[in-house]
Image 1 (cartoon, one colour):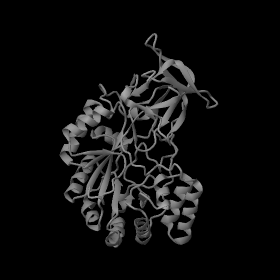
Image 2 (cartoon, helix red, strand yellow):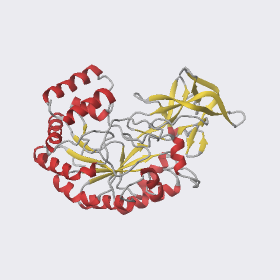
Image 3 (cartoon, helix red, strand yellow):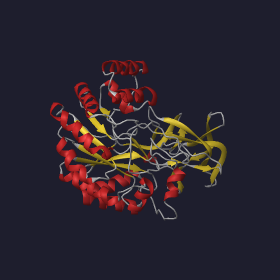
Image 4 (cartoon, one colour):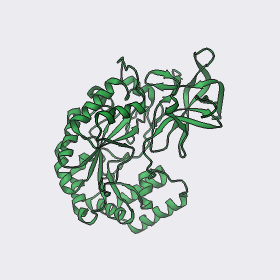
Length: 421
């Protein structure tokens, strides 16, 4: 960043041609506010990231001569940062009245400077488990075919091979490649109606699901086969229930406990994890006794009002989630919070204070700094007329939590616990 400190605005014409606007500077959206990106919140667009055109949305930039925000006729462009990165600002745009709902991705602010694209994001985890550079699709296809041939009767393997081949699911790809973290979807049902659900949306939502929900309930034997297979092939195997292609795994807690208990003694080196909404604390003892090592509990906020507005729980509430974390810690499980971070909302003072209070009360081990994948306008609508206040920024957000809760680690992925973590 030697020539300038702020990139120029980029936008796109109707044909998808990305253009630079040298007379306007890149802006970021921080909650409802527009601001120039902070220099320490910008990085070169990482490898394996994507650029999106935002239909029905006009790009906004700052005129450095007048200090005024200007709207251009061209479409706004956003960046989807590769896994391991958390956004520090979302794309700045003005929506047309008939703008379509955006698909469920995170829309980072991007600009152009010194002959490269830049994005408002920060690297929070150097783990390479979802990087597939150098692995040709033909190898993934061949390895998936080998699994289907070896386990022709296993419906779960058939489902996951399809995810690897057709949905390009990183977890399913890793399963067929025999590395890192393998998915174990089990549940067809859910006890929440999350605004940003990836696998099930009502017809009138305006969203298109990005993953196909599992259409059957696997048997303990089918689950155990996948667990044993991956544990034998991966160097540091992680086995995770709770995937984007299913509902809430706690609704199948008894099935999961049975499957885990049946193979736990033979896969002692593997980390068995559950990604969950934490809605049913009563199942924690059984899962822990069966051999679960860790849980990842998803939150968009530790403020009950905003949590309920996004997750729309059915039959449980935020206090159940709090109790789930407490119970998991009592059972000596490693607890991660899957924090769906949104710039300009998550890093405001009231949100930070709520989260610090939650962490201090429940003592989780780790925070996974994930991006909230949702049309920005829809998420901001959930806030109503509430005053968000000033934003601390991602770096200061993490510093505040480290200062108040120094035992908490940060990252992006579920950690492997076999190294004595």
